[in-house]
Image 1 (tube, rainbow, N blue to C red):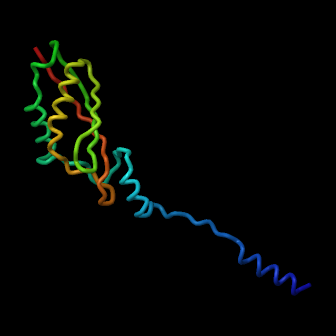
Image 2 (image 1 turned 90 degrees about the vertical axis):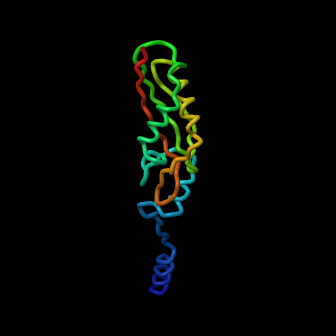
Image 3 (image 1 turned 180 degrees about the horizontal axis):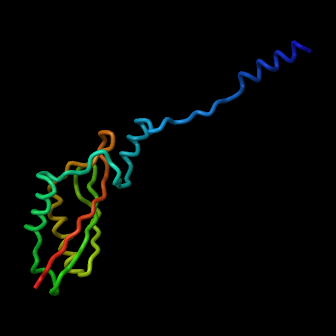
Length: 141
């Protein structure tokens, strides 16, 4: 009887499985897979950077925009959201604002500026997609 109890006790001790958990923060393989996904992230280690900085980007928008294409008079506000891709290009332009012609011109301007590549955002030194929002106000008389 003692022999049977001892054998069953030993065999039970080897068949108890343990649950494996992933450490937090996530391991590098999972972070690499996340960095290579198609979702645009806003929580990054480094934000995208336009060559010459954000002021150079604003100046480029001001120089490229053709105000004579905007219909109407008054103060117009628009915000364009777009994605800085892993290769630094701009895609996915969406404009919201109170004047459709201003929105269209704003998008046209940014598309023309998309030839200049940004330095992409990174998470753990992997380039990732990043969604940006760029507001603009114009007073046309």
